[in-house]
Image (cartoon, rainbow, N blue to C red; front, side, top):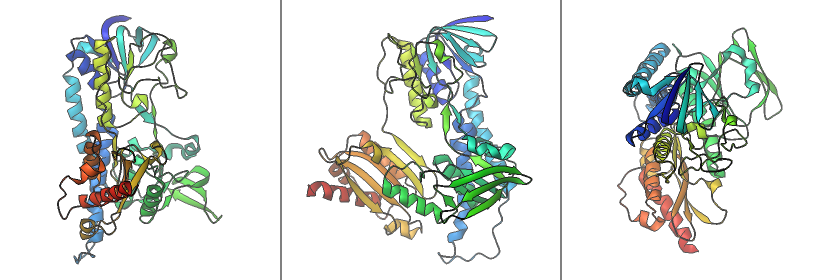
Length: 468
């Protein structure tokens, strides 16, 4: 058994782990980074980038459906070459992964350990059966994995997770997607627009990231108008059949129907990879879900007693599973591991999350459910009659911006609409800068742009604040 002694041990070489390792080394500490799976971040391999490649192909195919409304006539038909679509997805995906691997290759060989790490106690880790690492501080950055409800496992070998889609050589004829959250909406709509017979199944009427009742209803109706969406599906049975998967479903009117699909895709969330870390051998205090309790400003884990020298970052902490958050958390964890015990709060940015469906969905700052009732006003705008949105025939959307009654500060937003990734950035910058509704209305708005819709919502919020 090889023995290694370092200042900082980083478990996981994804976005958060790489950021933590680099921060620790930059601070002059000795460090190792331990990885038991393939190198290359979740974002590059199976997340952000390959999904956007599939969405880009779907958007190109869907654009032709509006040509007739613009007076553009299409002679013949558009043919989607599923093999060519997936070949580009895999090719560009591998290119993005390659950039990550170049970064990993630049790490000295002596600082990299291959294998699965497990805590032996508060100061040591064992990596597979070949190395024991004694450390002064540790950073847990083990990421997350797809979570599959037991009810779906009746599909047998025709059940896959969203990660597996990006290794397809061609598009299937049909697919049932379970989970209309961020991943399921993006993936399901893209497959539908690329000619795959797709139905999207959910539970509890949850669609997208929304908590605002009006936004939830609007999003559900919008997507249900485009493809079959069962936001609260009553599934009686799922079984593997000769040609794929059979779903027995009770409809709202009481009828029971069976539906056959080639594949079933579970897009039902992700679980932090902490179960096999041996955390029970440490003094770290664990929550009910087995994830260490931690301070999200310092990334420092809570201990049964004393000051913790163990930190956690990225998807492993089950807080904000987004690439930019993982990068920030990894840097904060690495810096604090390097300077321990002189731990300091790091910069946490205004929360921003975007779903790249069409129309897009986004939340910024606090969501409706995070706010104290009667402490805020809601500024509203519909994009259905918004000038630039109608010009582009992309006039579907609803935006709610929340402003604190006492101070007038912008505190949150939930929205669905055309290219609202850009509105989300404007609002995130405004909120992080501490802008009030009135101050934001003093900023310039060009004409004619979609951003004018945001101004309408801000004016609505200002009027409601003034009316008080």
